[in-house]
Length: 548
Image (tube, rainbow, N blue to C red; front, side, top):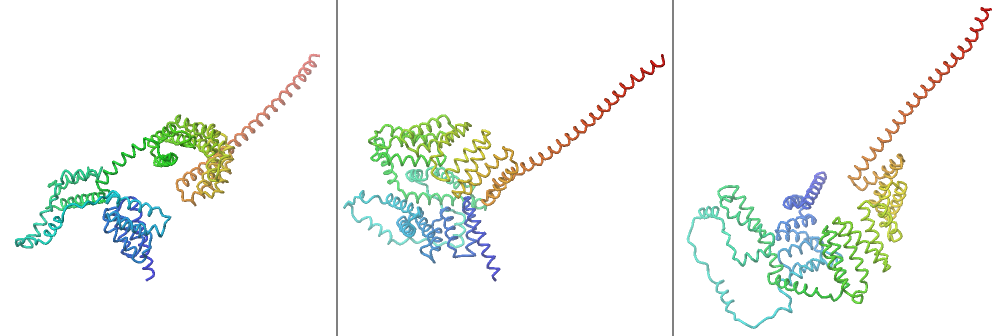
């Protein structure tokens, strides 16, 4: 029995994990099936109910989403995920008042969560859009009650009698005849187009498919299947249109457009709080850069810079610091766009202004960015100079480990291998102080690469092995493969070096043997020549004696 329970628990976890993966991939229908299977094993699991509720919301079925979120709250009314999901489902259903109630309830329990604060904001905005601000509502004592009387008459009228028809015949007729979709009026089409935006083209396409009788024939399975799919898509778009109409009615959109126009005209003049205006724009520029939208960031920074430069020091006491910061934003945008001269020019302007105003934070920022520009274009000496100047301005161990690592990389490119290793060791020490595993790995790899270049192969192997252990602990598979490949190459290099030395030794030994042989031959030759020299006078003497 216990084994069976364990298997069920294991199956539940597998289906949950499968659903989570499919949800992240955008496969909401498949994720829904996985969560449903998991709930058959554990029908009251709160996390699974909330997860399936999210799937229903993504598929446009807000009623089922609400049902699951309420089920997750059945045992614990203060379950945070369930409260938030119920509020989201109510919001998608257009019940903004009740959604606001649950957003407030969740915010009261967990005020630190941003989701509830944003929910309160969007629900209040939707309510304001739907009913308008109370100050703008004017009630007039006009008209009479004849409209309501007529409505009552309509309700009290009995429906006309229908002729008798055979039940089976009626069922057959319903199968063959599909409910005709009424044509939209020009005004309804215009409203739908404004609410759906780009999706309106999809709606028109689906409408054309629905009217194609050859494609959606009712006497074939494929035709019925296509009809059901197209109808499902149109129903989803109609649901979204109705939701957006409730969330922000057309009159609210018109009012918002007029307010935006008035705001644009107002922005042409100087804002009431220039500092707040600049800071808000700086945040938006940073967000654009983070979202990989450098052109948007560039345009906004240029516009704000023109405005700030036109204001006086009295209006903006920290004008010079703001201008320096905006030049930094411009430099970063140009860097992302690959326009290096413009990037260098703006970061240098940031450095000059920050130095004039004795703003250490600005100087540190500018030196950092200038180093990045120079490293990107291959001017490693200039990059090292700027980053080295930034070192005394470092405020944290984490900033230090990054900086030493980048300086070390530049030294490695310049061929200053000893300097590169020293910087790698400093980077490793700072990373250990900061407790950052990723930068410890980066620094360790830099040390190993420097030791390879210095010819300290055994030390390099030790450093690479330490790096490999770090990569395994962090689960960094690409790093593991790269380090393992480097170790393999390094071991082959060491083995090849040993073979080369052995071969060189054999050659030297052979040369020495040949040299000794040659010397022996020369000695033998000298001995023979000496003997010959001694024999010649003796022979001459013998001949002289004979003659006598």
